Length: 380
Image: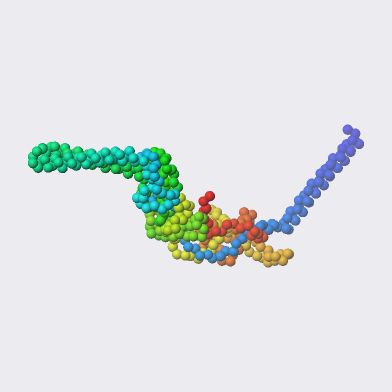
């Protein structure tokens, strides 16, 4: 290679190195300036929702859901088949115990009954005549005994026929309210065909399950408050009447039965209810929504909002401080705070995942998490 070529190559390499060095230096300068700018501005304020901690009155209660059940309820049917010849009720009517509801055709059975009653009458006459003959020793005792057996047999057949006729008469087994009629006049009913439902509605049972841990808190005779979206604004007070002496091995729950008055008949079997059982005296506790609390292995914490003066725009500069809390009982969406928060503290209820001690924040309460002490479950 000639001296001129070598010199030209050297110049080219130095020029390329100078260009790359300039580019690298510019990139380092730019990154440095961006870092300084970010450090100068600091962390931007994070949006959070807040609530002011306040003291609430707590009345301890076990709350659960329940279902109504009739004290007595049955789907009435017939023991024997037959043609419907009489319907003596209306759908939804109140009936008394023993009231005739449906009558099936009994004409053939009545004819047979008349025949059997005639045989019974003849057996009675034969017995009386033979007893008179026995007194004068005109017949033997064996003949009288046979007459007595014939009479007993005839009477038994009459009673059996009367029972068969009674099966054709469907009567209310207890007083209550009827459901919808499911038979028509002239219809043939087979044994077991449904005729109508019958429910005794006043009083009415309400049945519900509680965890086994709550069992020591419940006893017969304790008061129960029942509400339902079917009865808006109404509370029905009842009493616990029975506790199932068996814990469900699958759910570890215990079934409880209470009785509610139902004078107006508005409570119907199968209705969905919300139940509350009073537990002890009222207490005053600082209360927060459960969303405000972060549960961690090392303890439960909340973020409390503080102010450190006014910013350039004249508004208070806000920051948060993480504090450990001791939680107590829960009710609905709320938690009782035993220590760590004082009445009047401004506590973050949402947006905690972006926060740390000293993080700047601004408050946006346009959307708040639920904070209902007694949310009710509604049946769809």
